[in-house]
Amino acid sequence: MAVVIPALLRGFVGAICTQAASSRLTPSALRHLTLSSVMKSKRKTDHLERTADVVRREVVSAAKVCGAAHESPSVKRLRLLVADKDFSFKAGQWVDFFIPGVSVVGGFSICSSPRLLEQERMIELAVKYTNHPPALWIHNQCTLDSEVAMRVGGEFFFDPQPADASRNLVLIAGGVGINPLLSILRHATDLHRERANKGRGYEIGTIRLFYSAKNTSELLFKKNILDLVNEFPEKIACSLHVTKQTTQISAELKPYITEGRITEKEIRYHISRETLFYICGPPPMTDFFSKELESSHVPKEHIYFEKWW
Ligand SMILES: *[C@@H]1O[C@H](CO)[C@@H](O)[C@H](O)[C@H]1NC(C)=O
Image (cartoon, rainbow, N blue to C red; front, top):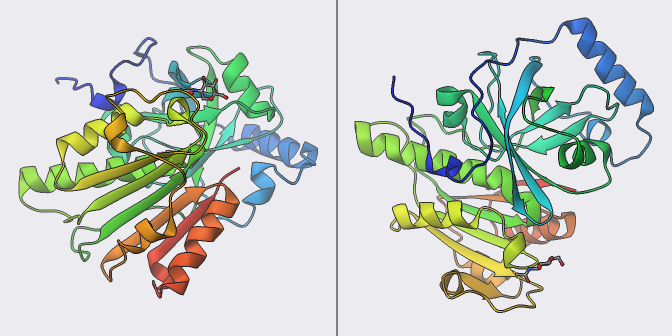
C-alpha cells in the first residue's frame, strides 16, 4: 500500500512511528488517573471542571508521540499515533489528555482532519505555552515515543452526512482558537475532494476563514491554510488579521493580511440562510460575534461557538 504524505505533514520534524502504541487503558488505570486529577485540581480553569457537563466518548486510548515541532515561538505542535480503532472524532472536537505522572488532565482541540486518523492513525495538536501542567509537560518534557492517553469530547463540530443540504461555512478564529476550525476546514476540503473524485458525497458550499492573531508569527498554520486556499480558490477564501504587528509583513504574506481586528461588518456581509458560523477564540471575542450574528437574525442553530482559554 502506498503511503501518501499529506501536505499538512510536510516539514514536520521527527521520526515516523512504525510501532503502534499499545492498546486501550484498563478501566482501573483510567479511574485512578481521572479521580486523582479531579480531586487535586482546585483551579476553576481546569479542563475537567469546565467541561464536566459536556458529552464525552467512553473510549480512552493510548497514544504515542510521533513528531513535535514549533508552530510559533509559543506554540508546539504534536503528532500522535493512536492504534486503537475505536478511537475516532468529529472535526472540531477536543481530547482529554492524560499524562502519566501529571495529575492535571489537559484539554486540547484536535487540529488535524478525521481522514488523517482513518488513513494513518494520526492526530495533531497545537499547544500554547502556559503554566498549566499539561502544557508545561508538552513544552518541556514530552519527547518522541512518550506515551499518553486520550478521550474525545465536545459538542462543537462539523459532521455533515452525504445527503444533508449544502451549506456555506464561515469560520471565525482568534489565537489558538484556530485549532478546531483548522480541523473543520481540512474536513470540509476532504469532503470536497471526495465529491470531486467520486461524483457523490456531501456537497460543501463556500468556506470563508477569518483568523486573527497578535502578529504574523503567532498566525498558526498560515502555510497550510494558504495551500488550501490556493488549491481551491473557487471554494475557500481566508482573511488573516494581525492586531499587534510591530515588524514589516513579508511580501509573500502581505496580500492575505489585514492590520486590525476582524470587524462585524465583514462578517455580516457573509450572512445567508445557507451559512453556518463556527466561532472559536477568547471568550470576549466569541461572545461578541455570536451576539452580533444573533442580532442580525442568524438562527441560533446556525451559530456554533467554543470558548477556549
Ligand atoms: C510576535 O510577537 C512575539 C511575542 O511578543 C515576538 O516574539 C515575535 O518576534 C513577534 N513576531 C513578529 C513577526 O513581529
